[in-house]
Length: 595
View 1 (tube, rainbow, N blue to C red):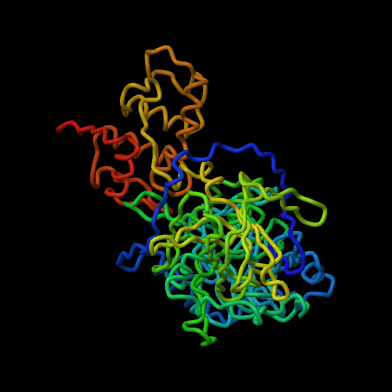
View 2 (view 1 turned 45 degrees about the vertical axis):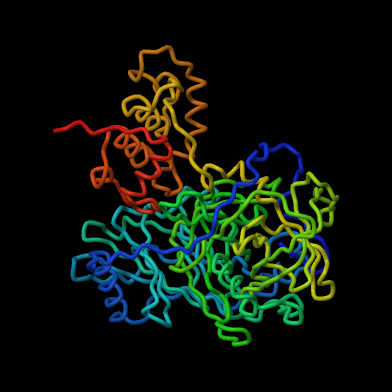
């Protein structure tokens, strides 16, 4: 949320209350960065893959599907992008367009497939768009029905399938999904109904699309040119940065998110490593003025490796991964948010290291970001001072404060720009790079390159995200803190709590001791973030509760995971699960009874 002309105001009103969790005593705590390696599993062609091929073959045989053409957006529709108020919110790059009522799904042109199922497609067109994404609302989406997206100009470009479990509450609607975006001005929607489902039983609505005027590689030219100029006179391409910072840049992504009204925005964020060396989990750090609610997180769509191959080559490419993230923690008063990406990032990205100690006077700092949504850029400068921020009618005011929650820096190489919001600030120590915070805003620009920028302090946000980034604490019995945890007491209590049981129903039949239910519930609430054992972004009884009970009973190896759905999990091998639980339980051993 960076403005080149004046200091910024966050999207949400910020109240610098000074009320926060205490700073970690161990200010020397640090975690080294690492290269992310997506799990490569060679699998035979699955029924879903074969089905997708059959659906695509059927589509191409049918020819062009039914079509809705919205034409070009009006000047009134585009007006929000050209108003001089980008400083009041994250960088806007997409407008909302209402889709007239489409024919009922049952009235689409359905054709039968070899498996006895049926498929139908519909094409949406929004002229002059750089990219399009569509809001789908599911009023009735039976199990087995699949939705795919395809590029009408490139039949081999298909995303999906999306099923009922991919839909989440969006605004007042209980089940909705913002699709990933497709390049160009058209997007195809394709439905598959298995033999047991009548298309008349599928009820979907498509109320609006987000018409993006800017994507990686260029824009549609619909934005006022004065607001869209690349800052080529003062920006520094990351491809021209020192080699080690080009490597660190692999942790950085430009991302688009769409609000419940259909307007899309662009920000920057960074993958951040955790202290669990047994597994790699794509935690992503960004600004709260970009992402501060579950709907925004669900719509996040990252683009990776958007950088020229060499300095001056002008040949940037990128990789797009699926949309969606789970909101883990957001603190508007610290302008900081941590999410867990729902889709694995590409192999070879970086998980950035971090440390919590204060910056030294005049320390050299570095930034990597996607200002204006352009190819990744690099800045280098100096730490100036810690500050406190207070919102004002025109942005925020800055007061130097050695105990303040924010960091002020000044650049002598490069700048930041709209779209840089949420990007990282790094410190180099002993040949390693460590993340220190994320961009709030500031006044650096081509006309004022040394104008100061303000960043968050990771050490102030860390107490709120320690359950995900830090080492898991010892987990004794919830009933008796002097005793080890057991399967039939603590495992059952945890699973019941995850299932929503409270009060007497939480403890019935579990223990004969006199239990302080309120104190027990507080212990379970405090432990809940650490009990996301499979790292899928949620603590659930059917997965995490069962894993805990099995481990405490003594199950190891393949028996530990047998029959448990591992979809969306980033700890998904017996070795990773066991290593995490061994840390959580501080080496407590529970031998499985012999048969």
